[in-house]
Image (cartoon, rainbow, N blue to C red; front, side):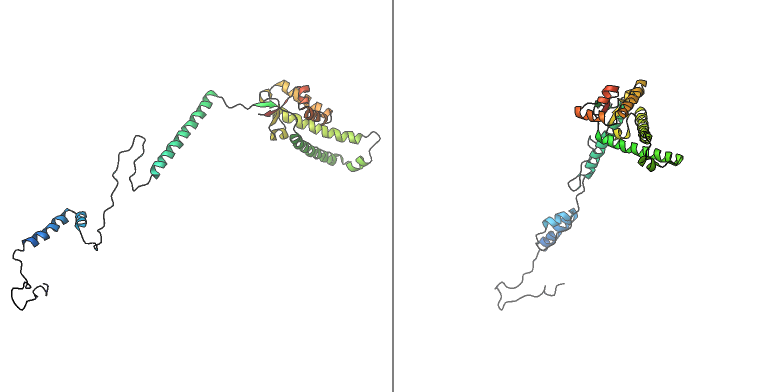
Length: 261
């Protein structure tokens, strides 16, 4: 009980109206107290809205949960306002990847069934200095290897024979014959069995078209081209081909030089 509840100020004379008057009917107070009890039973939100005290801290609210929605026809689930769209993006990417994989599988299956593939196109070309340089280096290396083996077997003094040749100069003819023989084997074997030399392959060139590779006439044309190039000294016909922008050796022998288009 409040100790100041029974305290009251009394005037010196009666009738001035300062004395405390006790309420006779306490029913309104009970009604006032009963009202918030009814509101408290209805929930915390109604009490917070009914509060008029500006210093009273607000009560914590429950986070609104996103109601689960039925899936859309596209297979994606709608996301609430407080969610993210990462799930929808993932589903789109998965769908695109699946469609791309299906297209690739269909094209591969179609190629296997029909047996068709993209054919390479070739066009006529002329002498390539870069391809000839690479082939020349390989031929020189092979010629030196053969010469080393020959000198080891015969035990001939190559430097002495070159500085003091015989009257007929057979040492020079023998050296050129060794180089020419290695060149002929190099050009002929690579072009007959592969269709091109390593230098021509490096620069997308070849002798004849791929469908001519297994024909007997193709081998004869390759042999004839190699003999013509060696007989003319390796340089005369290539230089003329560059000057006239035409494969003169191919026109003579029928072994035309082609390049991938």
